[in-house]
Length: 294
Ligand code: NDP
View 1: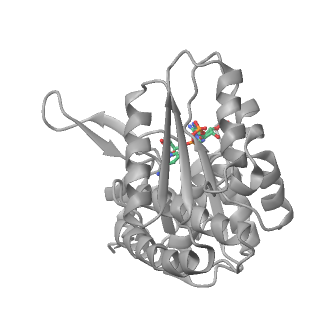
View 2: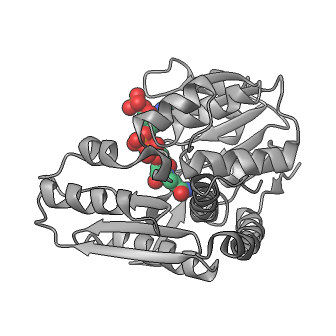
């Protein structure tokens, strides 16, 4: 058996087209386009790449991108002042502070300062709480992207056994909440889980968000499982001095057993930015008192 390859890149491209199509009607009603502000503190090269691609994708969707680049020695008070200004700025619907932040700044304090209705990353405790109790809010982009791929593949998820490996606030926990919301029977596994392969073998749906290259093997899986690989791990490539990206799942062996699986790269990765744009469009519609597009 060889699993279907879930093409996150193509799905994300389609989502981005649908979002771009939601911009002109918003502009016709409000006289402005949805706006996303991204704040980058310091010069971490990976963060700079993420911020650039988020800005580019925002503009490609016809929205306004506001980039705020602050020096690495920015004080917490100065960063909080920027966040406060963005909270009050009517042209800004979404605020994203790129993590990680330099050590003099407390990330939780900064996230707590973002207006929850502009918190398109979904990291504010108010949004974590809304997700937990089933209220409307913002859900972190990566797990929401994973859910979209799963629903596209499987339709109704009700009654499925789902195992989420990883319990971070950014991926694992919100992923588990989303699957519970879809009436899955959810298990959250983590570094202290006893006999992880046996736990994973129960699952119709496996979401791996661990950060360990190719940890999940094909013989851990139930035949026909759908596997979502969130991991992004850089490992030495075949050629001397070159590196390559791999997921948390050993794709070759997993594809022999699963019915469908996301590749790395080209699976979950492209969904994250597409969902960020989606959250921004939704924030704009909600703030304008308009029904948000699906
Ligand atoms: P974290 O490091 O915050 O969390 C990792 C989780 O994996 C923890 O809950 C940890 O358990 C668990 N874990 C670690 N080792 C094991 C093990 N041996 N067995 C079982 N569980 C284990 O990572 P994130 O959630 O932020 O990210 C996870 C992965 O997803 C990373 O590779 C990251 O790069 C990637 N990622 C990809 C994104 C995308 O856009 N595609 C976005 C965000 C992340 P414990 O809690 O017990 O320590």
